[in-house]
Length: 119
Image: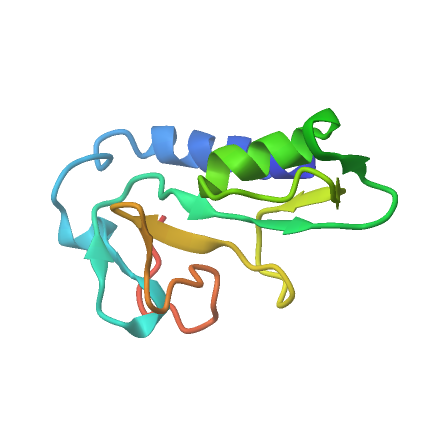
């Protein structure tokens, strides 16, 4: 629920900037993690983290399992309990920026090393 609220606030802020969305504008670019990678202002696909705690639901009974399978595209163990789907900055489960189905080499998009961030 909290992640949906954060996503909603982010989307609303993007739509309020309407005239800049999707246009090549040097003021609407960012460098991810200081590596010089620049992108147009748009929503970025994330590879999110999953937490397997004993209290989670097992495999296909878990919405977290289904989200993780759809998000990663990888085969994951359907016999494990899946408890939490993390989108954010926590050190033990950060989200990573995806580009062309690959994780950026230094893709922790929430790192404090952003050089430009005009979202």
